[in-house]
Length: 326
Image 1: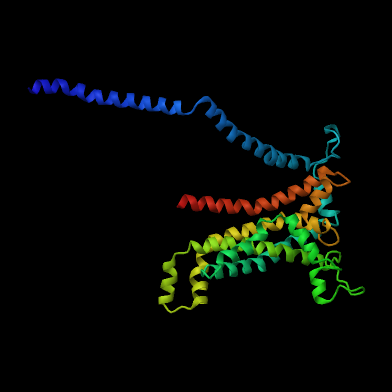
Image 2: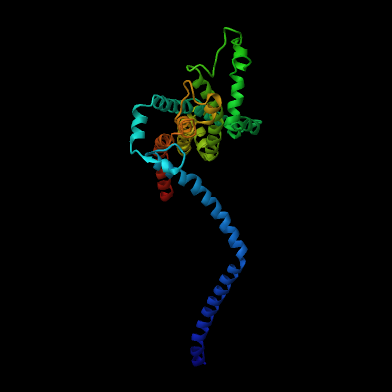
């Protein structure tokens, strides 16, 4: 009896292994049959077309701008491209009267966005996080400018700033001959007028970001702070706001990017003239303007790219390190 058992046990041990391998092989064949040739073609198109468009419209154009920054080209035929080395950058930093004012305006744009609409967006988020009545209606109202095109916002605020029939001049009585206030044409006022319109939109953006951060705060922290006798302001300052550190990082990066990419609103108002120069406006005026100095405009674009990467790369490094630790 024992001999039969011993002789049959190896076969019994081999048969399940062979059956398992066979079942795995059949399962793999079954999975391959699930993806027909048409399915594979569809997947290839769905993944390939966006990838090609991204490479062509983002990476290829960025690399082309970097290469053209060291050349001079009027845009007519590739044979007219001439290598000039660092001449474009020397002229940009030393002889362009609009470059440094544009840099200054971009810095002002960032400072205003970080000091005015960002705290206001945080205030709105804190109030809406209290689950007040009609909070959804308020969220929609404050977030509506974010989903509206910047060009549309520019046209709306042009009507508000109109010297003759605009809302502001009508309210303060500055719409009569001899008392007009030209909010768009006056170089001492137009940048601040545009920043008010930009802040109106940016506050809703910051509200949504901070509201998402507040929703992730552990309610037990609020309860523990209340048990310790802290009031609402102390709870926010000592407990809630420190937990919003990741959100604050995102807000800072987003605000810097918004300040660097500012273009639509200014272009709609007065095409970046008379005291509203920005780096993005200079790029556009040199590349697609009457002069068509594509190499020189590309040099300005490279400066803008370097400034953007100086902000984005440290943020990505910090994010990847945090994910590895987690």
